[in-house]
Image (cartoon, rainbow, N blue to C red):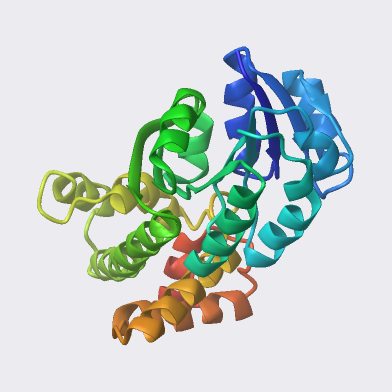
Amino acid sequence: MSKIAFIGIGRMGWHMAAHLAKAGHDVVVCDVVPGMADKWVAENGGAAVASPADAVRGREYVMTSLPADRELFAVADGIVSELAKGTVWIDHSTTSAEGSRVVATRVTEVGSAFLDAPVSGGVDGARNGTLTVMAGGNEGAFAKAETVMSGYAARMTLMGESGAGQITKMTNQICVVGVCQALAEGLDFAETAGLDVQKVIHVMLQGSSASWQMANRAEKMLAGEYNYGFSTTLMRKDIGLVLDEAASMNVPLPVTSMVGQMLAEVTVMGGAQWDWCSLMARQRRRKA
């Protein structure tokens, strides 16, 4: 089994690290939230440390699940000099592609490897160990990383050089945001028309409109249940990364931009920490 440091055990990282511990790996965890690491250890075993630098010493793998570039850079400042030669740092954060490239260069200079490896599948995927990983970086490092990532991921693909994982994740977000808003509109339309929406969902899941969002979020959207999953705040952050990258390539993204504005309205409604499928709450506002 491998010696692993896991930094950032929030909604996603908690479950990912737990799968590693259950697989028998030697896992050390660290989190900026006071008491979080100790709570994780009480439930899963392993060890908790106070700082990222303490976490990575003597580790074969370092895994991070962080909110944004700022946190990634802060962790890099604390751990790069502590990485053992040959350590593979697997970053599951969703950040800018350029940020990943910058950190990859720093890590390579000390004889270690960095993979930008954002994930898709949400908290449910992390809990069930069925995440999809899209990675950028060195082929040899990815081959090594697969052996440990398989503990919480069902699909892992090397997309290209550093930054390619983040660009792939951005592509994923472009595709899903429009689908979720369309789902909110469709459900509202069917409900207002007086249809049995449960039957509508059942029928649509057998046809061309079927999607992951419909299969996993439609019921909760109908029930108005949003206190779980991937927050509006984090999706707005992801959309911001997408729009910045698209602007640099002169690629128009009108639907993605529009949904970003809609999520800003959800935030004003008090939904900053709701799952971002709370687009449904915005859609229903006229009924309030």
